[in-house]
Length: 137
Image 1: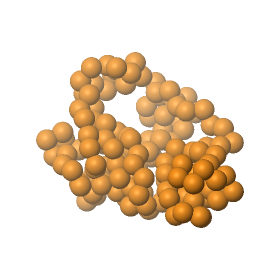
Image 2: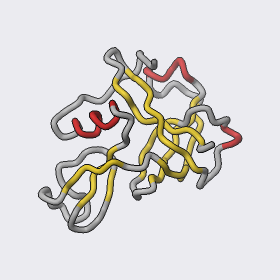
Image 3: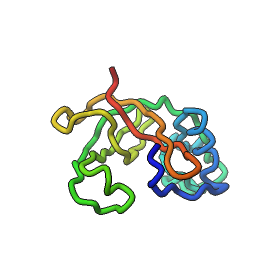
């Protein structure tokens, strides 16, 4: 468990996302009007700005590496014991980009469009599951 990490505050807005994570499910929001999808909870669609069309869906948990960087400096104190580590933008199959860390992939093996899948790692004192990604076998 990555107990030293700070976790986001769970609010009524993002509760469905964290409830899904506790069940091992990655959830994203979508708009029933324009079909857009996004990660990180929002009260309204970022395209049409409507609130009444926002719905949570269970995502596949699969995606591809869109971009990445290897972190060698302890920019965030909660990750100082994990230097170096890789942070990547993952393009989910449902469309949205999600920033996360990569797990178990050597830096020299990371390539654009590499298929990855979500794994949930417990963070913080209450073991809140957070999404990280590993290579698809």
